[in-house]
Length: 150
Ligand code: SF4
Image 1 (spheres, rainbow, N blue to C red):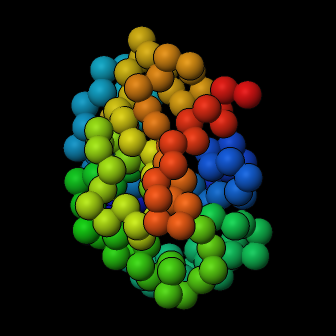
Image 2: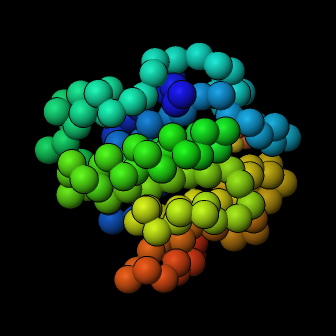
Image 3: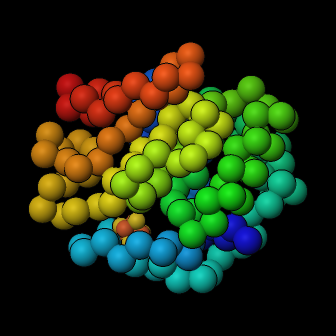
């Protein structure tokens, strides 16, 4: 079961999109220098179709994208939510994953970020980062990480 700690409308996580970023909890990763240790706990509100519909009702007209931040411990549930968004909205769908490889069903997402946080390499805005953001363009995952370096 997915749970979320909070959400926010953000402008820089996904290039060219106004994104509702939903911070999922129960993170299974243990990155050294983790920037959000509370997201590793089993806390927060349940995120299911009903909860997502309620968020869309509230913010759907202000945003162009929904991004799931985390959720690697419940990948199938993240994919279920992505399918729900595709069926019930025209919003882009993104996933900030801490895994090192693209998800099996990456085609469900317009954008996928992969790579755990390594403090010595930095996040996406660092040229030395190990993280990558892929944009699904006509079924092909194109690495657009350098968009963060301009
Ligand atoms: S992916 Fe890493 S940095 Fe992000 S919440 Fe999990 S442990 Fe922390």
